[in-house]
Every structure is written in C-alpha cells, then in structure tokens.
Length: 293
Image (cartoon, rainbow, N blue to C red; front, side):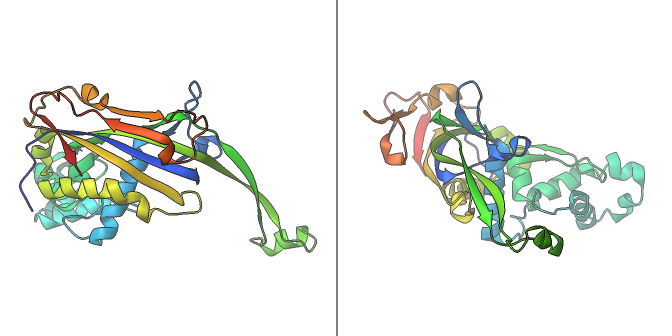
C-alpha cells in the first residue's frame, strides 16, 4: 500500500434524491427522516458510511486490504478470532483473561486495521468478546441536511399476491393487498466530513485509501439503486486540503465557502438545475487549497 496521508482534509458532499426515500426512519414507519422544527430532511452519517462500505466491498470483492468489517450478517467476534490466528496467538483464544485484554490485543488491532478498510477509515469498537481493542477512525462524517425544507408524500400501493394460503382464503378470490410508500419529491442534501492525518498515522489510512474514499463518495449511489432510491446522485464533492497535518484553518470557515441557493423564481425545486451552487475560492487561508476530486 501507499504511504499514510500527512495532510488534513475537510469536505462537503452534495447529493440529491428525486421521488425516493433517502433514509427511512424505522421508528416512524420508515418515513423519510426530518427535522420537525425546520422541515429539513436528514440522512444519518451511518447511512452514508454504509454506502461507502458497500461500494468498496463491491469494487474489491471483500479481499484484504479492503475487506469490510461491518456488513450484513457479519459475526464480528469471528473476525476478531481471525486476527488472533493470523498473528500466531491462537493460545490466547483459549485463555479468557488474555483474549479480553492480554498482551496480544495491540497486535490484533493492527491486523484488523491492515485488513479491513472500514476499520482503518471509520474506526471500530472491537472489544466485544474476543478483544481486538478500539480504533478511532481518521474519517468522520456528519448527518446530511437538506438545503431547503422537504415534503414527504405518502402513496398507496397494491400487491397482486399474498404470502400464504390462509391470506388468500381471507381475500375471497381477490389477492390484492394494500400498502404504503413514502417519498420525497426532491431534496438536495449537504453532508460534511473530516479526515485527520494524526489519526490516519495510528490506523495506517493511506493515500490509496483516501483516493478510494473520494471515488466511493462520488459513485456510491450508482450501486445503491432500489425502488425507494432509484434517482439519487452525488452532485458535488468539494475537498479542502490543508498543508499541515493539524490543519491551517477551522473547518466551519471553509464549509461556509460552499453556498447553495435556489435560483430566482423557484419555490418548489424538483431538480439540481434549479439550484445555484457556488464555491468561494477567493482569498483562501494560507496553506489551504481546493481539490478537484
């Protein structure tokens, strides 16, 4: 792998949804997440990281050093056990005290970072059962928030089949069942992210990993299609690079340079073209540049 990154990065991710549900809330009947006070839509950081993980897993076929630790049906302690076997510490697995906090924990942690992309990128708590320590990831993301308030629509749908014979008998010859689907007609969302060089040194997050992260953020919706997320796309990724590893300017001051506004006369946006997106690159702080990724 390439060398560990030595610059700090802050980024703004703009993506949109049309006639879809970008992130349903299971505690609200799968309604699109919303800020009740402002009416603006929300997408969780966990949702966005999931899409990055899925993209990397698809591209690299779940092979080291790009395996994915947090994935569907994963048994996390089984992955921890792999680490102990790989470093030649099988005996520690037989000793309850050693596998929960023995001298091999650090080596096991390093093996997990080396083999799993999402561990060395986002971090992980790997102290459940078989202890591989804890990793504070260099890449962190915020909730995404829509630029303007969204409208949630509810649609009645029908299914022309039932799941069981008993259901069919209750329908008296008509197998149609009713359901509900929730969509956002249109929403442009902005998320913010941070990449720490000092933390990257601890996990081994490299220049190649960084390039893969940018690639995943730009393309993750292309492989996440479903009936609820058919028209979602990354519209812009603005990356601020700092010369120093600790940073040359506050992140919030850089984020304020990315402005999204509705064009004149537009009150109910239904496409990205109805927004004016501008990035102010004038008089950037010393040591900060904007990357084209």
